Length: 92
Image 1 (tube, rainbow, N blue to C red):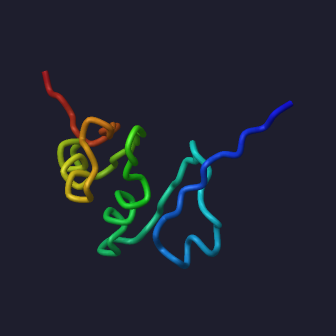
Image 2: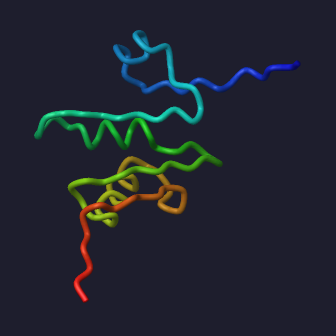
């Protein structure tokens, strides 16, 4: 059996990279953080897709369009980012 080595993603944050050693492809990350802690910027930085990759984020406090704008500000192509919007409600 030939086993391929998976790519390890670095967060760019030395403390996280030293502690975790990177994240394997397909890793799910759950970030819990208090308000006003720049957690949203960290989430975008950690999950911003590289060329040829995709990212999916679940939003519990912002509309999908706002999350996409955050990714765009972080330098991501919006066509490679999916958002599960659990905020917006449609009233019929």
